[in-house]
Image 1 (cartoon, one colour):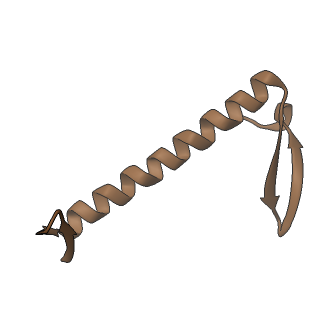
Image 2 (cartoon, rainbow, N blue to C red):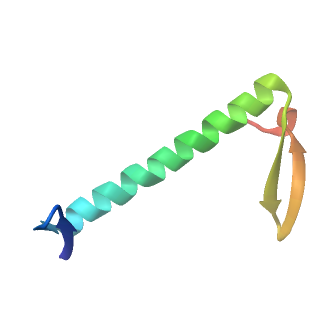
Length: 65
């Protein structure tokens, strides 16, 4: 269990609650990434990404959604 302080009270979160929260955060990051790639592809933008140890610019049309 992990203890966190909330407005002067102590709240206890179980491991399951923490895992659920982490899963939701991960899902949110994946959704944001998907939307960013879709927007780049539709609008013809390029994105700068870190790939194979290098920073590269990729045209939006190169992404597979």
